Image 1 (cartoon, rainbow, N blue to C red):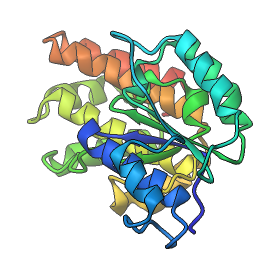
Image 2: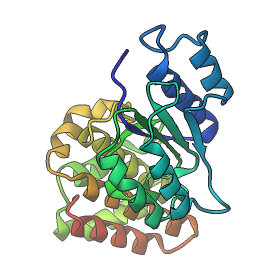
Image 3: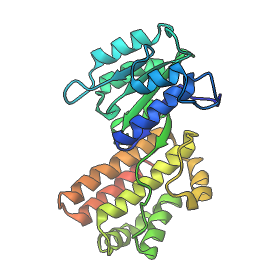
Image 4: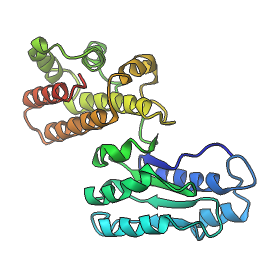
Length: 267
């Protein structure tokens, strides 16, 4: 059986990530094939949701609270009933409160060998950097970022991410991005995808790169940045994306974004 890590973050729409989560659950426990057979009793019950070692963790209202995670942690240290590995699927894991995520952290740091955590999420920035850095990231979200960005603008965006921001030119950069032919949120989403790819490389995730054509440059940049800094960069980007989508001042949003990224030492 191929090696399966102890914890994954599956990014994307839940109708897609739940299917991938069940496939991982089967692959971790199927004894018939190196992946999964879909025919053995274990695979069939995992698929049906009736296996005694498969658990679904759901939000209570708008969040997953710390009390639920404490119950999960306590149960996760009990051995599986039948399977090789107990599997916990966290639906809408990005709705875990910070207190709940911190309660999960100890088990992520030192998990039992018979445990598999699968965190389904749409919003990576809602997860603590310490949680993200202890999981493999599998990204099933769209992969067409940057395709409509003019070449000259895209090159400048990559320059400030990969080579660093020359602060003496900040007014030039701000005006260039604010006056671009495409919407500012599209440019910022592309920047977020680049930082996400660097995070994938830094954490040695098996997730595919969205900007695979930049892989050599991204690998080089990843040597200089920490997972915590990268998650904060993505968080900063999405904060400003919300500003421009709400029709806020785009020039100010770009200025605040570039200053924020510079202060976090990711530019």
